[in-house]
Image (cartoon, rainbow, N blue to C red; front, side, top):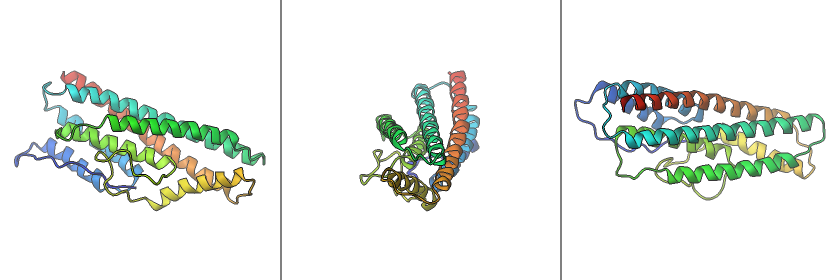
Length: 238
């Protein structure tokens, strides 16, 4: 869906292989063009980070430890957002099957979720690290936040203004055509239903979006477990 801005980290010529492995995973995430690939990439990244932490002592890890709590909180919130969205989609599907096309509850739920997404995006902006922080673990945290922001941007209704996060995330917001059209199809379909317009293939559109949400939930659940393991490792070092 997007390319990420990963700050360049100056490494010694004879960097430890475990350090280089983390850097390589960061670069692969930078080149990724799919949300699901990004989630899979995060899993691989944190596997490398676990190995990297085995070579570290407890010095200068306090800020990273605080960040690990923040990442868990953000990941949990996004999982909840996706779960709420998927439930709303399922309820709308049920309404269409009953031929009642009652979209009012879906619209109410959508507005609540939109507010939650905007709040989460604002929190991500506040959690942005100072540009002077350029350690490897700080870059891992920044990249994780970037992936999280891309998911929230994907499930939110596109707006004309630019991303709320300037340097943590995407320098070139290149939309993944298939994913973006899926979101817009649902949005346009719901607008049509509110006007009483019969929409062909409504169930197919909603079904595809529900599957996408489920895939994202599953991916986030895996990342969430990685983040828990990451925090435990940090605590063990300290």
